[in-house]
Every structure is written in C-alpha cells, then in structure tokens.
Length: 85
Length: 520
Image 1 (cartoon, rainbow over the protein chains, first blue to last red):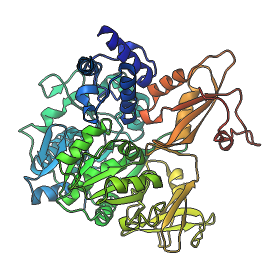
Image 2: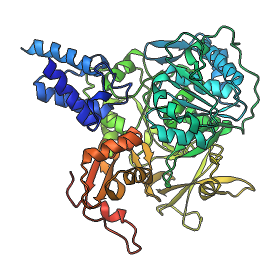
Image 3: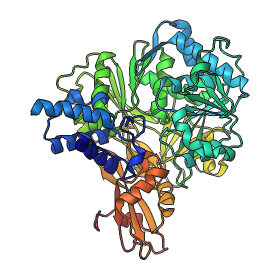
Image 4: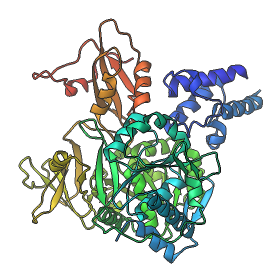
C-alpha cells in the first residue's frame, strides 16, 4: 500500500498543486478544506483511479468519505481492490 | 427597510422553523437571530461603529452566515472575501476599505500573521476554531468566534438600530480592468430592492428550501442566503459542488425546491447519471453569470421536466438585470429575458441615444438596485454611473453589448472590455498578467479567454521568455496558484517566440485568440 499512497500523492501534487513540494500536503488533509480540489478535479481524480487501478467507481461512491484526503483514498482503494481480486 | 430585518422579521414570525442547514448543523430562526445579536453586541464592544467595514474571510459555513447578519445588526458594512484569496490581495482589500475587524478561521490566519504591521486599521480579529477554551488570546489579539456566539452575558436582543436604508450595507469586491479589485458599494436599499424583485419573479414562498453551493463572496451565492431569510425559507449551505453526488443526495434528502446554478455546475450535473434520482420537490433551477449553452438548456429540461428553468443575467453593480420567464425558454433559449420587476433596462449607442430592436449597443440599467459606486474610486464610478433623465439620478452603463428583439427580449453580444468570465466569475486579464510579469524569466505575457465547454471561458496565458530562461507550464501555474484565487490560475499556457502587436505597439489579443502555435 506504500506504493499506492505514493502514486496517489504524486497525482494530487502534480495535478492539483501544480508540482509544489510534498511537504505542503499531510495524508489527513481534507482536499476540500485546503482548497486543493474542485468539482472538475474530482472527475479527473476518478478517471485516474479507474484507469490506473482498473476499478469501476460507482456514482454513489463519489463522496468525501472515500475521496477527500490521501488517507481516505488509500482506504477506499484498498477496499475496492480487495473486492476485485 | 434594512437587510438585517430579513432575519429579524422571519425570526419573529416563525422562530422554531429551520433557517440554516450546513454540514451536520441545523439552526432555527431563533437560534440564528440570538447568535447574530450576541456577535453584533460583541462587535460593538470591540469598537465597531456605524458604517465601519468588517471583513468576513470564511468558507461557506454557519459562522459566515451569522457574521453577515451580525455585522449588519451592529450598523456596520460587511464584505465577504473569497477564502481562496491569497494574503497579498487580502491585505490590499483590508487596507483599501480600512476594515476595522476581520472574522475568519484560525486556519486562514497563518499567512496573515506577518502582515499585521501592514494593517494599521485592523483592530480586532474574531477567529473560529481556536483551540483554547478562553474567550480571548491576548498575545495574538484574537477573540474566539464560537465562544462569542454562545456568551451568556451578551444580550440576545438586537442592538439599537442606527442606520437608515441609504446607508451602506455591503462591499462586494469585483475584478476591474485595471487589475486591482474594486469594492462595489451596496446600500440597504440596493439589496432590499434587488432581493424583492428577484423573490417576486421566482415566486418564492416560506416553504421554499434553497440549496446553495456557490461561495458567499460571489453575490449570486450571497443573495441565496439573504433571499431565503427574507422569505422565511430554509437555506441549505454546501461548501461547494466538489462532490456532486453528495450535493445531489442533499437535494433529495432536504426536499430542496430551489437550486441556483452557473454554467460550469450545469455542465458537471449533465455528466452525472441522474436516472435513479427523483426530484419531486424541486420547483425551480436558476442560471446566471454566463449564458447557458442551448444544448445544456435542452438537456436540463429533460433531466428536470417538471422544473421551471430561469435563464438570467446580471452584474455585481446592480445584482441582477434580467430573467427569462420559464415559459419562454423553449421559444428563445439564447435570450436572457427582460428587465426584472421594478427596474428599467434599455440599449444605447455610443452617443447615449436609445436604439431600436435588432441594433447592438450598450445595456443601461435604471433602478434602486443600482450600486452607489466603487469604493473611493470616483473616476471609475463616473465612467459607469451616468446621469439619468431625472435630476440627480444615476443609471448604470453595464459595459455589456446587447441587442433587443421586437418584443423586448435581450440577447447578450459581448463585453466592451476584455474581462473574462470563467466558472461564472469575472476575471481581469490585467490582474493575472501582473502576476505573470512578477515571475522571473517572463518577458511578455498576455491573458485571454478561450471557449471551454465546462468553464464557459478558460483562462489562457501566452508568454514570451527572456533569453536563456526556461519555464514550464507547471512553473507558471504554480506561481499563479501562489498569488491568485484558484479560479484565476490559467488552464492553458502557451510559449511563443514573439507576440503579435497592433500598429500602436500594443499586444493584439484579437490575433492571439486565433488557434495557432503549439500548446504545451
């Protein structure tokens, strides 16, 4: 899972923080509260998750509990990947 | 009438009714009224006087709503600053209007600490989320917002009224073509007039439940709260439209009747799978800030067949100009309608003479909703507020080019200046260009709007570099994101060897808008 966390962090930093150094983002930081992501960003994030991890994300899963921090994303992906394997 | 009376009258009529829902909190009118009164008394005790400016620098939250009405109850003037505003611009705005108090969140304060010496007018800061349980942190000169709102020793009745309705109620900062934000001065009368006209044509009733995802720094978002309180309805305040399905669930759960959109939100909405949802309570959907593409209108009509769809147009300087009655939307989908109730609109040529149907000219607005001017900018004010036909009256020259059809319906043609409308927000190219020029290596920079299905217009920066300089798209975007609000960061960055010039040597934006050159 270490890998996944790094990949996710890299994606968020590259795409939403325009490559600002990692130190700015804690794994528990809410993307919403930090103003990191907007609604178009969420759609980009979903495309990335689906393509990179070959999972299908249901509409009802697009909620802050699953997506709104690095930690939430890792937890969500772990669950999804268990289901598919 | 004064704006805080929207709340006071509704609280008197139906004190136990739900006024405000935000995240997991639900407040009745009585609770909102009492907490606002306490905060108003606390503001007065801190020395906030009639007409003083108080800045609110908060996300969409219960505290933001309470602060707005508390400032008004104290007889002062509120301004809501977008929470993604960076510290340079915040400092500029606070000093520009000489704000005496700031209401914010402890998390937003970090960047401002070093600026305190540059803010000579700012006397008090109320902060939400302070960890200590004490009311006041004397060292940091902070007052706890939560503790103030619940302080039992503060009266929960409103302070004595000192204002009249031609006093200022709010400043709304908006992008100017000069690059510096300007404060639109709104009196109580301006806001009451606009809110009355809008709630009249939307046929709002106390049973209405309005869901707002737009920031309160944006007048369209702000008015959702003001109008909900005016009609004694319920406002569901969401942080944003970032998690669209969470918002859709709220629409259903809270039996929402009114849902305001901007084109970007409608574009996202139409990408969602809404088939398994039913919205029996939804009565109306509104759109403003930029025209809805005809394709969106058709699709929205399919998704919400029973819902009244209002296409509207406005600008901060008068709040709203026009609305298209919902029964006209299938007949003239590209029109933004007619002037709203208690307001007159007409189109003039370059000499200020009224023109007939089909002729393109500048739109002029006459009504008690028209602002008092731009804060301490008499020349800019004189450019847009000009004499009307009654002695002393001022009418608003919008800077927007329109034509009118035979039946008086308005069609937007373009802007007279180069202001870009992105995600429904007005963006000044000059403001972004100033930031680009502050980046080492940039020789010349120009910012234009390019058509974008999702954003309305997307922001594009075209740059030439100094000799030997090496910058990437990401370098440019990172620099911009450190100095500008999120919605102003260019989506596209193009590097060129030279920029096209007009005969007078100015950079030609017209030529740049043509699709040539490689994009990184």
